[in-house]
Image (cartoon, rainbow, N blue to C red; front, side):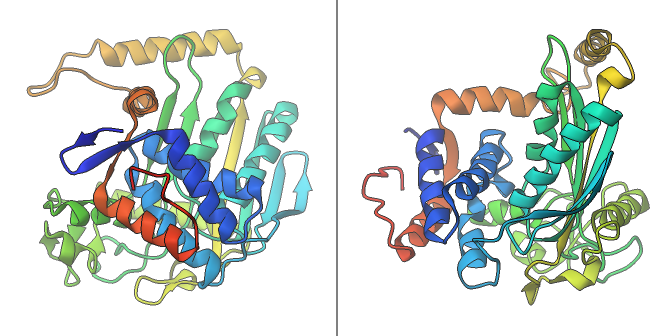
Length: 356
């Protein structure tokens, strides 16, 4: 453990152990608590702190007083050779989405491509966690999810669209795999909360206030409108991802999910996953070598002023993962204080956690 400005480096395994204990105390089985906790710590290891352990208090509240069932067991309600529909039964989203991803990986090995739709679910965290599950099987993983509306359609000033992220993971050979995971907004509420905690101004172009005017004030942004990336293009893609995530499984769409003011409706979320079996289309080694070449081309690109390197999607996260495993995950004091408060409310002894 070491201090960095207002951050503390925390060992990933120690952090995981505490977060597992929190979710077990909320009523989850050890297996489900471990999966849920791992998804959050994994996000922090990648530097995606907006989807990391900052979510622990929120998740604990969902599981104890906000109507999400900690003991729910997602189940397959319909399937065919190349598709599956999973009902989360009001479990946390990570549990049902992981089940669906495991199913489509198995099916894609036989059919080349398989897809899964999930309903009856809740917040499922960073989507790359699920797409990376396909990589050891020499498959391309795809995942998206719907979200409570926080974004206006292009030209509007009303929360009608979720930021509905898309994640895709592509295997490589000698290089790190390509891992893309991003919402169709300039930022997320989780990231804005990080800026608010640190007292930092938000970069221009991320957020609009409630009247649709740009703002860099995180306190105004929390109650404002997230701005779509690429204008009407980002807003349109967010709508498409919302449809894929909800209407194939009969999950809720858009404003049916709840609101920022009133919170999410438990068990209303939907997600969508898919896997592509590379060997069904192309020789795997040839495919991977071509992906390596594409990444190398990115590395060899002429640099723009102010840059010292060009990274392929997922490379920075892979570098952080190695660094944070060795040196600890940097977490700010507000996140740690909130975790301590949650643990103590659940009667968890945190005296051994010197970093809290």
